[in-house]
Length: 214
Image (cartoon, rainbow, N blue to C red):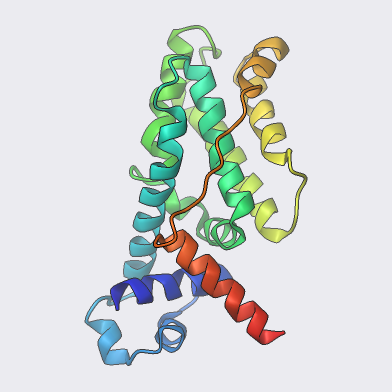
């Protein structure tokens, strides 16, 4: 039942935003009683934390294999950001949830903050990135990603939109045009959430609900 509630909460958060009082909507969407709901969660924030934690873990599991064996920190940053944005582009429900949650998701265990600070710092030490205070660099990269996700949540974007965003971030961080083109060149693996994952389950359910409403 907990999985069903988290799945329902992701869909409702994506539709109504994280500031709304969504417990009645989640109870209705999950088709459970209010009493059963309170056996697992007490507040909106509890729900948001549960959805965010599960999504972050799943996104890290999908992206980590694509960057784990890359020695070049600039290439790791480019590949990780491209994977992150392409995942949001291919999963509309995910993009809508991330856009609605915004800065609330940027905690220590988020997919962004799990690796990006260390990779940016290593990139600075190796001379790939300009020697700008790390918190400023992180704000630039994370801010660009959030704005891009918000745009993708609002409607379709070009297939190479993630590449354009990441290339702009790398140039802002001090990379040359040639070096930026080099780290943007490798093909990305296809990121497919497992069928049993929250990403896949919620996306399938949202599509089914949309089809039923037509």
